[in-house]
Image 1 (tube, rainbow, N blue to C red):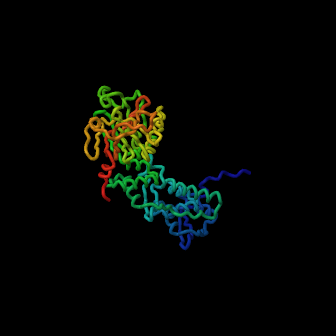
Image 2: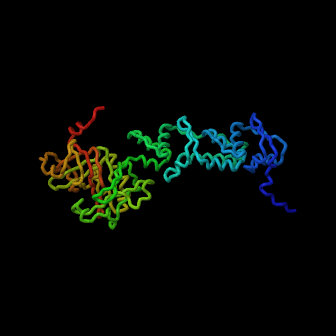
Length: 433
């Protein structure tokens, strides 16, 4: 004989009847209406068969008070990460599907960072780059692990689960929350760097880019936007080289050629991740090099200028530009010398330069007028690597550059620089500690 179809509401209890639940040391009286509000559950399954019995539950009455609020139609007022974790564990134990869903889609992250409790609104982290973050992944792991272990291993109760704790600085997280809320902070360079490291830890990638020091301006002479950013903060994935048919500006060609009289160079461009994704066109990149690992070489007879990059700056330069240049048929290895130097032709005619602390209005005329006693490497003759010729060497302590590209060639275009001409001048610029 076929059985009748059993409807889901057959597990519902009489709404007006009161049912007794002994949770730990406390007795709760709950109506069938409240128990039916989140069913089927452990409660409805028990009382359908045992309407007048008392259900004994060896769990925390303090946590069950939160569950009672939920069953009676109130919002669950969770104070911290401990209450949140224990409430979810009991929601799984009591088989309350609606409460589990509410906690999974809660509007807040409840976390403890360095001993301080935070109630962080998820809406603050909804933007691309911030949304797939440390807290979201941690909470998802909590939900998935508890449910998977409890259901697949057929345990008597959910496995113990520690509330989420992060051994980081609570003051730094408070600063990040202030920034996410649209607030402003007066940050020292050291504090800014620390906050950027915290952003990387929590995977607040968009906020990290907001903290990266950058200056955006409109160049009225080139009719284009430019962005100044430290080389160490440039992300290689977002660097681009304009195509030959893509003009870097809308300025007439004759005026643009006066920038570099002999040929037309296209500046490498950059879009900051997440912040500039909607820009129709990338900005021209001006990158700052702050380390003393860049040297200008002026060759007197050949009237040429080269810039040599070494050390950590060379490693960073490669990591930023090598891939995008290779995609445009430019081999950066062709510019490397055996003594671990990357040597590129340079243009300084447009730059504002200070040498030994003094402004140098026309570096080319200075080079022509100087009595050359110094011998520098002749980078114009690749067949004689160590050949020395009369010239001038300037070590740059800080500089701004554009990287020009034209017909599979590279040119370092100096925008601004501070230089010293020798060891004595370098020591003179040092500050006392």
